[in-house]
Amino acid sequence: MVKRITAAILFLSVLPLAASSTPISYECDIESYSPRYGGIPDKAYFVIDAEAKTAMAFDPFIYTRSKVPVAVEFKELRADKYLLKWTVEGVPLRNNGTAVFSFSTRIDVAKGTLNMQSWLLGDDGDRRGKGTCKPIKG
Image 1: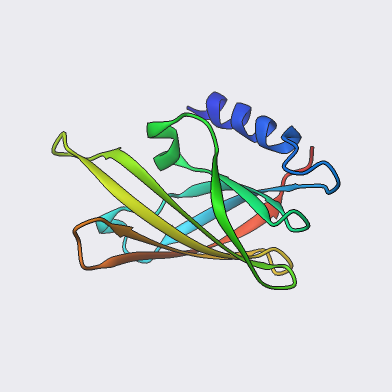
Image 2: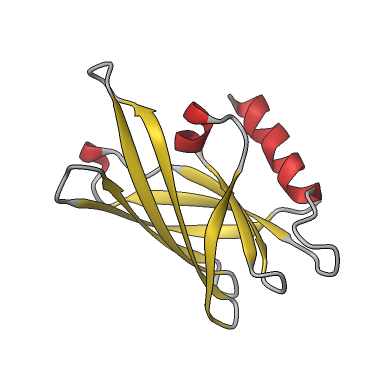
């Protein structure tokens, strides 16, 4: 899996999200507030193109389904702070079933911080985590 994640990072770092701007790739380490319940990845990768107002994400949940990064909903909250949202369907569960997870991530690239929430479809609780992000040098 590490080789595939590395390949995905390289893919993300050269992927032109918009012809006139420069997307920046980030590697984020995340600590879950509720590790017992899962739903928050330990690591995630993002490519953000603030000028084009686009972003992509890649994490272990996305990997289980598509093996490639996915485009995510992008909103600029203020300079260098963004809200990213996406949904991953068919995430394998321990009981051999699958689930749908929705994610919401606030990333402050100036401070290098991240706050993530996820929801499991059909569950009334949410999972939360916080982390640090650093640009990936390409």
